[in-house]
Image (cartoon, rainbow, N blue to C red; front, side, top):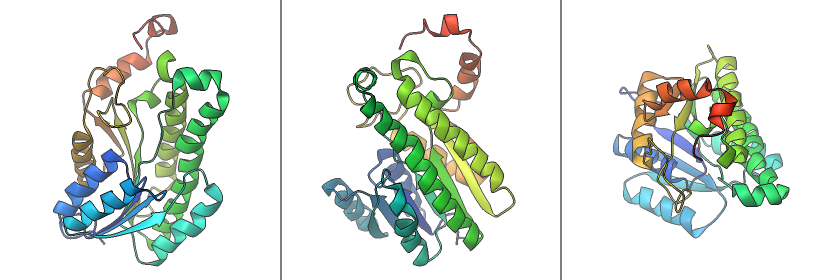
Length: 251
């Protein structure tokens, strides 16, 4: 259960090597979160993340989780919840893909869609059911500003995030009144390993800034969090641009 200050005592990260998720976990561990599950495919990066969090005082366990193996999600994640209540689930996995290559080779586009949307729907529903069964908890879904309107330069990734975003909003509505809180996080361009080498977009942010916004959103029980907050107004305008104008915007 959350402590008297609303800090989750236990959390599960789907995408256990995500820079944004790990930045959020570090903040929460510094504020008394003690039990952390990192779910991802086995890798040296996952073990390094677990060891780092243990060094900060957390009890950390790793679980073999593959977003694309949707048939395993119920069993794999069910074992985590069977160990005890989870106060917070961070759904943070996803891939950017390579737009130009994936247009030429549709199998790559399918992988982006299956990871960012299909895998997230599967894992999200499994976790939502478990949170509802225990009667409390938060599910934080890492979306993207790209979900608001897909640009020519990244419409494959953007469309996958748009589907995820709509799913998470609908899930939050479905769970209203159950004790389960769903929060959608829409960061702009995040300076991270995933975006290394890409041209930086306006309103760029960092994993640490997103983590701070997640923590504040959890305290406020927000439904949607923009990072930075000014993107909310910017994207409201962009969303209503005529397509003839929108397609001329720089990629």
